[in-house]
Image (cartoon, rainbow, N blue to C red; front, side, top):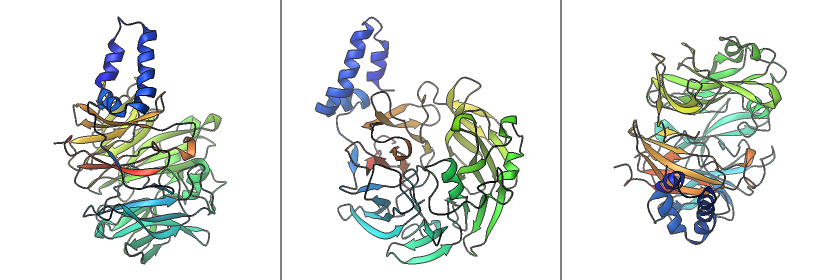
Length: 428
């Protein structure tokens, strides 16, 4: 937490009305008219570290926080370009995928038009591990089916897979897929429109779930079924509910995968558990089933950092050991909000953000792992009156490959754009 926030909270001798007035002035007039002072109060520095790398009038974004947009040399950023920014995409709305050429005045170069995307995760843009300099992957919708595409930076299409790709193993030999049509029905904004869910009427299909895709042969194999998950240590509330999966992530060495198992709950919401399994789907284990489970990241092949309930104490970041079941709180007193967490390449730092606070401000931060301190990088305006629900623009911060720069998506300048922050001096 910033020194300013701590000071405001600890001014107990100052009447609440005065403290509240000072805070409102800082978060409105000072932010708009005295930005250097605002940054000094919140982050301890006057310079603005947040640099735009895409520009309007069209809108640009990368997607989720668990993949890096930088290629191997750091000269290119993968990006989407959209003509609108104020509504969810329909099945007839295409998006452009391309690269930002950082060494050519941040020129955006379009490479393909695709029809399978959303605001949260885009078309699952990601560099291919076997050639992360010039080959990348994205999803598309063709002839009423979602597919995975491999393309190079000259725009050549190199391969089409029969299933859309969610996550790729570090060795580039395999990937993981799920039913994006089912995901869209139950969690709009994360799946795709344009294809039918053949198991729409089935609560927990035996032939749907997580698929392993052999990237050499193209063959896909169901490794964890929804029926299997629904029958795994079931709760009574799961009965007669639709089930689905989301947020597959491969561990750093490729030995395991983690993912969310979700099912419909009362009132139109959903419940969630975090599972881990071996890369082939064996060794399935529910790692967190606390009622509160959100964003996570792998520290290595065994340990996960996850925002979850900590022994009925409310949400905390927990470090969960998949081998021993041990868990401990990370960032007690400093990381007290759910955010999109990820470890730096050297695992010495946690990158994180927040959702908009009561002033519609998101905070971008670093946390030295395992014991702190927390460093606030920036606070960025994200008005929920314009961007919330499916069209919200989470910062989704991601590391570059060196661990010295961070990329975010943001709407603080009025359009959805991508920004880069140099954090090299902060993580020394």
